Length: 345
Ligand code: UT7
Image 1 (tube, rainbow, N blue to C red):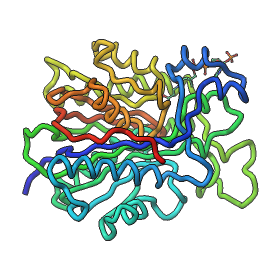
Image 2 (image 1 turned 120 degrees about the horizontal axis):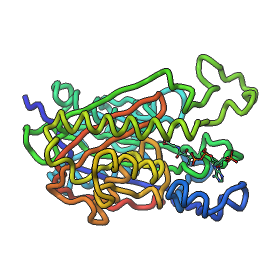
Image 3 (image 1 turned 90 degrees about the horizontal axis):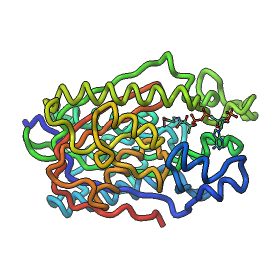
């Protein structure tokens, strides 16, 4: 039995509708200038009424499967596990992953959701890689997908300026230690004392959904932006450094860091902490905003498509989000037949 989990497919999906900063400023007390300078974001994609997270997850999954098929002949029948990271599932119950598996024609496989907000994709990679290493599965589709436009307070200029909808996915297969694409290790952590910093208060077992409107806008997502900013820089930098040590890159460091895309000032600060140049920090939030669990795989797909990420690069992925949660992993980027991040039609 092999003990390595290797990336062999990558895809992303964005909804068709684009909302520019100027369009937001037409209905909110904000401006293109404020959003660009404070966050680096220029536009984001949002789903239409009637669309849901699974629609984006299916599209990203389909593209990752096409990429894996072109890469090494992976067929849908070869997939025996679907792990979906999301904090905006189609329904509170059941999980969205079984539905996504069924719509992709993978019915019958093990399928479950992971809830770790913006760190969800890294947690999902860790769960799937562990199951591959343990022999529980042989090929996994790992998806990060979120539609935060469905839970944002329409009047909250802070959150509406940042978040966008999107999904990204990778295919993992079992392989051999030392192969390009092998996930080299993980650093994962959490701090529940910070749970209130990023939250949707109502709708769970603590503050139940009664069919009536929740008090004080508790049905909406809320975030303590400034505190989260500080925690994001601190924890992504610490986690990345811990992982760099663990995988033996302390000398040369990573060539590229693909960090959770929330704010370009956070990305620059993490780059400074790691002693990296601007070119080494992948940025695509200007075009998509913060897509939560979709963020890291979408940034990967974008960096591959634009040539910023190339085979042989030492790549470090790091995320931070609600929980609080954080996590990092690393790999040597493999030759991949990637399918461009198409707009979801
Ligand atoms: O994805 C999970 C992780 N999330 C993050 O990492 C997000 C981290 N946080 C951030 O990116 C930033 O904190 C924000 C972009 C959310 C906010 O930027 P900031 O520079 O930290 O602003 P602030 O919250 O300290 O607010 C400064 C001012 C406030 O006005 P007053 O009280 O000084 O008059 C805000 O009301 O900026 C105001 N403000 C805005 N003004 C115009 C906040 N959002 C906006 C806006 N347009 N969209």
